[in-house]
Length: 485
Image: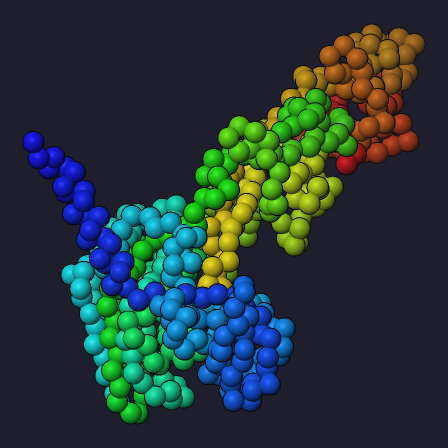
């Protein structure tokens, strides 16, 4: 019996193999210059592993020295072809990215969003400015965007142009976000080396994506501009796709948890406002404590924070894209930052908070950024994890009472001429040290208004009242109590 499913898989595999064989991928290697005596003419001898070969630099303004570590482009991976030095190891930049190397480091997410036939091509001629718009699956790009960190534009390119100042060709895409329009451009003129003489060479560039809502994919085009002499350019197998680095470190299994070594409850913070609690962001990978290099951002819940911009185009105070709306960024560069209330410690991994940071209950959030790679001069693939923790100021019931030394009822012709009023702050069954507070005394006048009569006295919790002069029938006294800070 014929296994139809197996035949289908074999057919697909054959098609994929042929597609790969049809792409003329270049290979980049790292070598060491062993002879720079002919450097003035752009010719160098380079050692790679156990072999020494000739390599050439097409950039007359760049001179290499013996023992320099350089990046060498090997056309189609074939050492019998002319090899070009395209930069030093420390300055590889965005030039002639080795697509095979890139594919080992990145992982495609979804599919190609170019809405044209697979063999679609754009043909442009030098000698006049020209652009050709082509189609994207715009709705799918927007729907698939949440959670994506990077996007790649790539194409197989043929070109035969004479280098000219101001001449440029490539592919340009524009996307609108909530408050801005960003342009992503694969500009071949910006690549070092000689991008004007290409034969079916795959070129690509990777861009980081903002953590904002994507609202519209405006469009994409191939373009050529600024060339006076004619010359042919062709883009084929155009690719627009979300990507991410391969998760070699297992960072997809990363999680975070905020640890409170002294608990998350303040006891009577209104009385002891020097008490501190520590919140620490711990990272875990597959359930095990993990301590990689990381950066941390701390936030507290504030529903007033949005991603809106003011009239001068500045983001709302306290907003940070890692925290998002509803979270205020605790930032030491903020003019309102007060380390006596919230102190960032342990390199940002922890914060120390006092009761002043907790109006009854407050929720804190930490965003940790881990990992990441530099691919083609672009940082990408940082894993971000977050955790939240609520802190409570669980102040026990406090009672304020006023006691009179001679009672609160005085009979006519009595011998009592004065009484002393004492305001006491009671926590549970115990009186709190009265020196922790400021006291303001007042009385209700005969016309029904309140009149202040004493504040911050030598012994602020006491007030002496002359019975015969101050109390006519009935008199009401008030005492307002404030913590000294």
